Image (tube, rainbow, N blue to C red; front, side, top):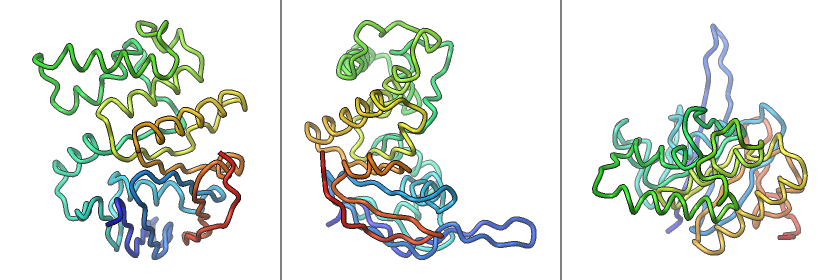
Length: 233
């Protein structure tokens, strides 16, 4: 059984009297431990598709199955719990809270998921270990204003991993980074994928990143097609 299945997904936005089809009858099967990318021009439907797979956006029609469960049939509370427990989201903007330290920002998903005093120590230890894993051991108590853009992105990655998600959905995670930092971030993704078996779906406009993924799909005018590429990672 595939870990993720998108079945005939369609998303139509209505703006005034006009209907815009952002995603047009897309199907996609993803196995546990896959490392894939979705490429395409701006406005091709990449982010809309990723948002539907991650349960952020409900499709106009079609279904998304995660481990056999139709997430589109879940009520808002159940869907929120699923996202918090099983999915990790990484976006182009790190979106760290400026009044919280790096460690406190990493712990945010745990707080939203019902963090209790009885697990404080264990969860805080995991946050520290994640920050060490991503190379920020000396920045644990630093505030976002004291971190570079690449360091802030690393904190956002640790935050996405704190609840041990089975699926990471990354939307242009290196879009505003220099080439060296981009390479470090993608290398970190591969390390997590290999060590933990975490599935990655990366939306990107970068063909260099796409070539480092095991499978590459291209969005064009709302449709999706797999491309044959030479895997270089």
